Amino acid sequence: MKKPKDVADLAARLTAGATTPLQVVASVVPLEPAPTAESPSAPKRGSVSVFLRLPSTLHARVADIATQRTKETGKGVTVQQIILELLERGL
Image (cartoon, rainbow, N blue to C red):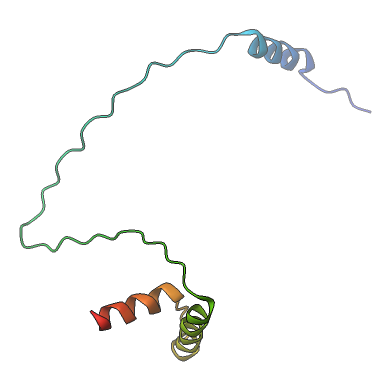
């Protein structure tokens, strides 16, 4: 069986690492984000996270629509996408 190389060096580094005190890092105050140059005519797009608890029957209906749309288009369509479409049509 071969003897491992650098065992003594590894043992010394592990011992040094275990006995060296941890350094205290001073907290850094975050800088204000730099304003971005946007043209006034550019539309501002954003989104907000919303968490819904749908009744299981309603979720099943929306999931069936998403499944059917996935089969028709060949691309994955999520329940969330269907809900967004329904909301946009209804508002």
